Image 1: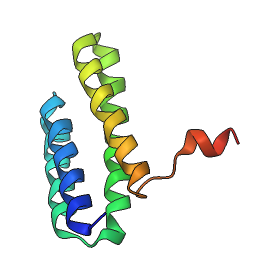
Image 2: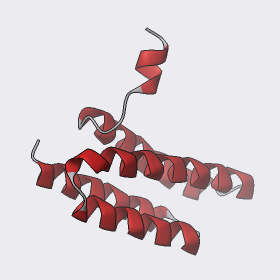
Image 3: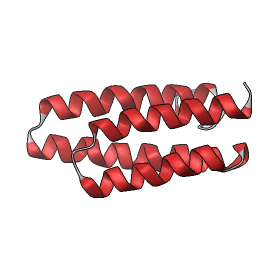
Image 4: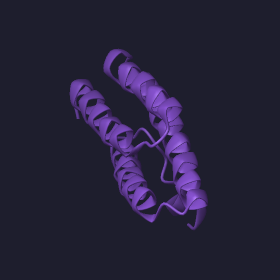
Amino acid sequence: MTQQYVAGELSLLLAHLRSAATDQEAAREIDNFRQEAETMPLATLGSVAVRAMALADGMCWASIARGDVTGFSRLAEVSARLHEFGVCAGLLRDQITTTYR
């Protein structure tokens, strides 16, 4: 994959995550992640993906705490896509696979 493709796809997935955000603070943080994904070298994109996954996890838990099933479902779907892309693009290590081998 080219650096432009990886950065573009990560930015697109972050845009989907932002559209699922219900908190303005989280939305601003995702905007910052997108800017980093679009402007930083490929070597730093893993850090962006890891931080985005951590934020998405927190957003999922917040949705559960509010009883927002629809919001949780949207966030979980985007989070899964973000994780899968991160693993396939070499930005994330697949922790589940490496844990159980």
